[in-house]
Amino acid sequence: MSKITFRERARYWFDNTMSRGTASLIGWLALVSVALLVVVTVLTLWLAPNEPEGVTGPGHVLWLALMHALSPGKISSDEGSTAYMTVMFAGSLGGIFIVSMLVGLLSNGLKQKVDRLRKGRSRIVESGHTVVLGWSDQIFTIVAELSKAQASQRSSVIAILAERDKLEMEDQIREQAGDLGKTRIVCRTGRPTEPHDLDLMNLTEARSVVVLSPEREDPDAHVIKILLALAKREGVHPPAVAALTSSRNLAAALLAGGQEVLLVDSDDTASRLIVQSSRQSGMSVVCMDLLNFDGGEIYLRTPKKLVGVTYGEALHAYQTASVIGLRRPSGVVLNPPGETVIDADDQVIVIAHDDSHVRLAAGMPSIEDGAIAETMGTPAEPERTLLLNWNGRAEQIVRYLDGYVAPGAVLEIAADHPKAGTGLAGLAHLTVNVKDCDTTDRFALESLGVGLFQHVIVLSDDRFDPHHSDTRTLMTLLQLRDMQSALGEHYSIVSEMHDENNRSLAEVTEADDIVISDTVIGLLLAQLAENRHLADVFGYLFDSRGSEIYPRPAASYVKTGVKVSFSTVVESARRKGETAIGYRKNTARNDPPHYGIVLNPDKTEPIVLEEADSVIVLAER
Image (cartoon, rainbow, N blue to C red; front, side):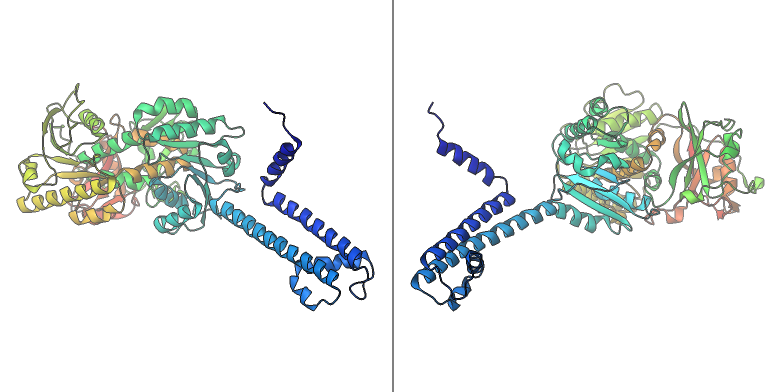
């Protein structure tokens, strides 16, 4: 190998200095400028020592050379010998090149700085902010809900880090999230899996972190990598909540993020809600109301005045809030036995429209004993359920449904999906039949005898993109509703969709139970980001074991057509071992957005329930 020459070393050194950016280039340009001025000054003093007229010395000549270099137009007013004019012309010509290069360098440097600011690469200096890592359609729900939750604060900040253009993210949020009130959105472009990019979010001062499941192949692997990056960083670790698409990856994600990270299983949560909504009409509306920050919200309270009081007595303790359970050191329990005594270590779980409404009532409410009905519940009977279409979470849905139904129940699966009905061995209660069927075809649907079923579930077909799949679901809903109207049939319908915007289109079909899986997960993530202690509450609520939400005939609780207070309804449910949290008016069951459902009414407010109305209770099956 040949020896490195001095020229090569010099060239290498020069290349390194040139690659250091705009500041280095301007430094070299300054050296060239100084050299030009010195050469022009020396030549002028040598070739034209007494020119121009009135020159007082070398400093004066240096100043004239500088002015000619910066303003070449000055040469037009010069007078003198040929030597003097030649030197000044050369100086002016050199100045043109230097000034042009300087302008170009400054323009390019400014452009790079603007591009860097446009990409959002500066470090956030906020504190108490919520950080969202990643990007998906859920982000619009999360941002909108967090802004509502933090509306009472003087100012709140949501910081987002994703591999997208900063301005593009800000524009989409403005268009789809709506009015965010006092909440400011700060977006940064970067990879949430890179420690250097995570440093931009000032996580040490953050209030909480939300990790989104991206819309790409194998999204859970990306989430787990982000959790690893968060766990490995130094400093304070704020509370984090992350969404996974598959239950199979929960163990790996828990190992990556640690015990302090709350994990939301998207498929599991959506599957549970679909099953519960299929059995209780209006269940999806109730759950959405509890999950968002618009209507009834769930709060945890530790009122000292309720220590030593039984759960049954505590049901009447609040006028504008509904008690639904207890959070004990041993775990959460909703609708515990009425004789359960509230201990000092317990927290009372309540539903209220705002935390300011969670106040103990001045005294016991009046109860109309004469209006309380003494009817008993009817035992569960085998049911027939029709499942239309198939997707990746369908097997899980069927197994959850098997845990709800009575022995002898029948499930008919109608789909043209190649995997329809597979993987269902070991069911305890359900008898499953599978038929090949195009669920958008009217004649194929009529051949199923839909009127023989009590419940119909319409799933999103995962063979198509989300937009087209929602379109097919809408077509199926329209066919089913038209068949109901023409044949006078009655059965509940719950459908699964991806896009929240399609809900308003589906409302023309009178389909009040529509589960938007992305919206549900976004709402749950926002709730847990604000209060991680609610994870156990929602986990209990969506579980088939223990008490669940049921709409039951109003006539089972109070005399219909009679004006009663809601406290009377609560007392009637208490005597049955249940917790009443609201009611549903049948006359408004097709009126969006609440479809006749009223959660957490004022207990002193008089209401009149008719035969077709329902009382919404937490109860055992």
